[in-house]
Structures are given as C-alpha cells and as structure tokens.
Length: 222
Image (cartoon, rainbow, N blue to C red; front, side, top):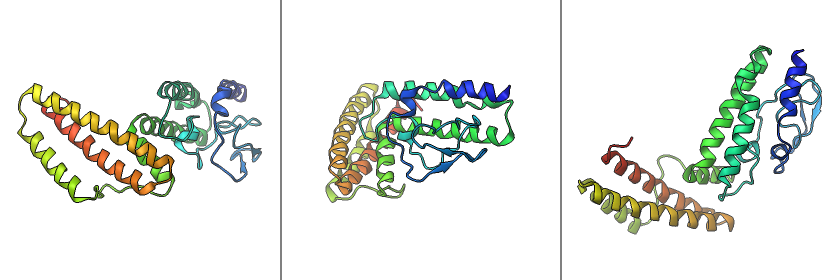
C-alpha cells in the first residue's frame, strides 16, 4: 500500500522537469534501498523499482531545478519547477515512510529551498556559477583597483549623509542602475570564460548590494 502511494508521487514528477537538461553526474548510481542501477538523467528523484526517494548526491542547483546552467534564468519557469518539485518531495509526503526516507526527503527539501533562493537572486546566482567553475569568492574579498576603492568610500560617505526620503530614493535608483550594469558585465565575462573579470564584477556587485541594504534601512526597511 505504501509502495503504491509513493509510486503515485514519483509518477507525478513532470517529464519536462526530469529531463530538462543533462544531469551533472557522470558515474553510474544505484538506488540506496534496492541497489537498482539508476539512470542519472531520468531517475533523479525516485527509484522506479522500489519508489524510494533518492538523495541529492552531486546534482547542481540548476540540474535539480531543471533549468539551464546560465546567468540568464527564466524566473517563471524556475518558480513553476520549484513548486511542482516541492509538492512531490516535501517531508509531509513521507510521514508513513521509513526513518531514512524521511531524512532524505528533509535533506532534499532543504536543498531545493536553498537552490531556489540562490538561483532567483542575481548576486547569489552569479556567485554560485563561479563556484561551479572553481572560481568562488570569499566573504573577505573586495573588488580590486584604486579607482573603485575611492568610489566605494565616496558612495558610503554620501549614503551616510542622506536624510530625506527623496534623496535616499534617488541614490537607490543609481545603485540599482549600477547593479544592472554589473550583471551585464558578469554575463558577458562569464560566457566568454573571462572568470577574473566575472569575479571582479561579482565583488563590485556585492558592494552595491550592501549599499542598497543600508539605504533601505535608512528608509525603515529591514
């Protein structure tokens, strides 16, 4: 009875979500429960033999959510895939299953949420793409170049001096425009394998995100 119930869950995973892109894994993988050899591309979520939910293993956020690994992401498709998959692997669906299946569903659900939050936000998405290429940034890193360091100091001083809502909103518009321009720079650099330039764009973007957060706090937003 339980196997039939889980089977129905597995059958509801949309085909387009299962095979939207090529899976990152290159080695054969066996089901942890029945040891059946699994097709990494078609059987990412459930075993077709015993219906057991499968661990995340080495799947990237892009692969798990069925979208192409790129900076430009179809946010509406991303959200649709997220909601569909969330409804299938949510821990509540496995209340009558074994302890291990419950644990796996909790880990998968947590991974799914992290993946969605990362890919929907441009800065985090850019940072993640660099990480996949072995070019990740650390929290301590800042953009290099004397000119930008001077610009950072001047912008921080300007932000600190603002008091009126009109002035703050005007600066927010400029900050958003800078972020948009850096997104374009990152995309062009990343797609042409100029990872140092892409990394520099991310570090600058990170500064403007912090500046935007500080300006929003002055307006009373958290």
